[in-house]
Image 1: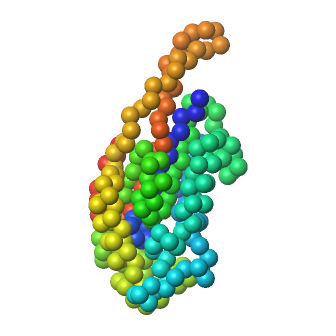
Image 2: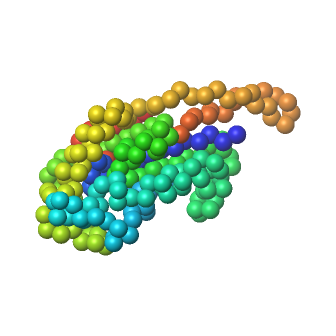
Length: 218
């Protein structure tokens, strides 16, 4: 039996804010946790010619419509249907002695704005950083599509505030376990001795935005 934990890590572009430390945390978790896979929301951006220009005059990269969320959901569902197969297909060294636990981390900046994904998380985290630090970090980054002048104040930060307000209005809770552990059936070894049943948890969600909110350890 596989113990599957889906962990959503919110990126930092806005609603998890830009340059909030999600990737750094994700990489640390990936090295520390057994049988751990990561799905990055940034991998699901639509082609540049499909990104609309908004009333603010900027390409709308920081909105949900800029992402192929159906494709991302399908990728998450592929992991849920066979975590071990998914891990091996993505180059993860599967450790069979790790209680057959499999963990999925979702890393992105709009993970809590797409309800079909929100319903899959069992743990959620959201990292924030203050405006000044966020803007400074953003200015030090080099993107394939460079930020035009005024993008941060004219689009990135307003979109972050917008989606954060929507997240709060929709009652999306972060920083706590979202579901009770399901009891596992009895387990016997090859000699017929009863063993302690393995822990089976529903998907976990771990969403990382910038640092403004404290992130409980549990």
